[in-house]
Amino acid sequence: MNRLSELLAAAFLCLAASAASAQVRPFPLSDVELLEGRARQNMRLDSAWLASIPINRLMHSFQVNAGVASGREGGYMTVRKYGGWESLDCELRGHTCGHFLSACSLMYLATGEESFRHKGDSAVAVLATCQEALGSGYISAFPEELINRNIRGTGVWAPWYTLHKILAGLLDFNEATGSREALGVAAGLADWAYAKLSPIDSTTRTVMLRNEFGGINEAFWNLYGISGDPRHRWLADFFHHEAVLDPLKEHDGDFGTKHTNTFIPKVIGEIRKYELTGDGQSRNLAEFFWNEVVSHHCYATGSVSDKEHFFPLTDFSEHITGYSGETCCTYNMLKLSRHLFCLCPSAAIGDYYERALLNHIMGQQDPETGMVSYFLPLAPGTHKVYSTKENSFWCCVGSGFESHAKYAECVYFHDDRDLWVNLYMPTALNWEEKGFRLVQKTEFPYGTKISIRIEAENAREFCIRFRWPSWCSSPTVSVNGKRQKLSGVPGSFIVLERKWKNGDRIELELPMNLHLEYVPGRTDMAALMYGPVVLAGEFGTEGMASAFSDPSRYNDYYTYDYRIPSGFPSSLRVLGGDPSAGIVPVEGGRLEFRSSEGYLLRPVFDIHRQRHTVYWNIEKTRNPGE
Image (tube, rainbow, N blue to C red; front, side):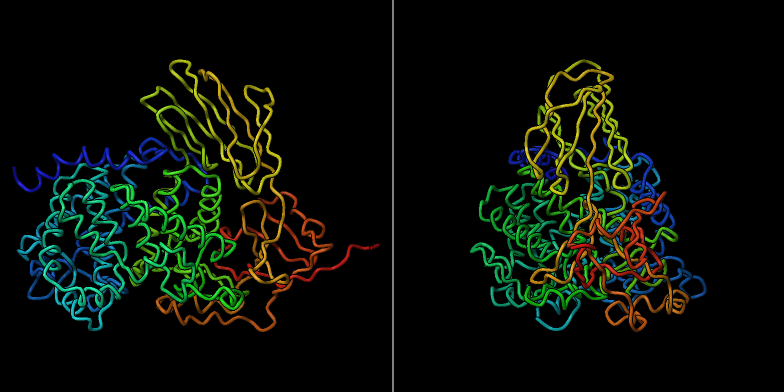
């Protein structure tokens, strides 16, 4: 039996073991159709962007590195090279290919469009050719010398991070399409990695792990979950970063100024380890980390980090900047949340997921161009800064490829009997093995009503559990027009158990209210929210014309000059401490409000190419007559 055949023979056994510890399971994207709405609009733009990327341009640097570059004419390369993080002089080149493969996998499942499978097949074929030319199993867009520099402890920009994206993309594509070639390339890369790393000593390992390596531990755990090969488990354990992860075992929540998006993927690897091995310490540290981040380190938008780093909580307000909320951090927190929800379904996890998905991920994408932002800037007067098709390819572009293809991945969960409705989003669920279909129609969050229609081949008794959001004090639920008596509290699940039959209808209403979310440690600075939605002041484009006319400036994402006009509005009057007393809905608007100062307030996810204010200095005033 050859190497690939061994992997395939072990796959079903290992994947079954992987699912054994889960209380619930998400439905595959192929079972959940996004219906018309904001998420589907975003997915459509993402789809067009992915479809427009030529494989020969995306894979050119891999071919150059392997010495198999095609397209020569008269001694000159005819392939037009990409810039930014995919330029031939960037040490992170090649990472986009991994994200692209993952995104094509997700988009293929979500839409059924064969073109995404074909594009992925083409990219994998190039990787296989390059891997064969290099001969050792190594595959990358940069020379192996960058790995050698990492092992020696000399300066280099995150080569294992890039290999993580490539390996993850190959495994995602294999899972989505059954591509034996993708799995074979992944196995060859792992063979090379084991040969490369197994001889090194513990001192060398300690030094090399200081360099960012993304979620390569998770990727090797995923490969081990398919293969059962002890060498793949060894590789996953090799990238257990004791200096970062072991304090979490002791519930040490002092993250200092650690690089946030280096930290989160390491924890995702640990929860994957728990799922595959039952290691209780790995689960414990992952749950502790999630609770610490969500409870103490998140902005109102659900995003985290300032210039990609944690910061002292005593200085929270000083880190409301133009470089807050790296999008990759939110992408990875949502990924971790999905794992944890499967282990123990929790409305609190669902609440966080909803908040971060709506306010950050959904608002990352420019509705005019489909381009995406690196940060979600929160300082008054800042604005979103978008990528370009030719000269960006940041990490947040790659994770954006994926995020806007998988809106439906956490809407519904199930066990062997019951169904969980976690997110309110226009979707159609096809639970084929139960002969059951559910159609959810809603304008949420623009509206508060959710309508569910049941289509069933045969009547069947089971529970449907609807997340009761913590922000909703008084939901109403009816079944076939009959109001239901609810038990429970906000932050739990509404449980409806009955024999469901074809044509049954469920109506939910989740009223939303205005409220303030204060900055930790402050009673005079807060974000304004309506239910789970962060409302921001929209303040026009003064001084922004030059920014949008010079896309090259968008690569300067750390020192970008927002040119904020002096005296920019940053104060909000709140009458009697109740924002609803002086902030009123705009008639005919979609989630639009007007403050007593006359400011237009809209969801931050709907504000694009405009300056905004998210966090306000709160001026509490008394109601007239007090």
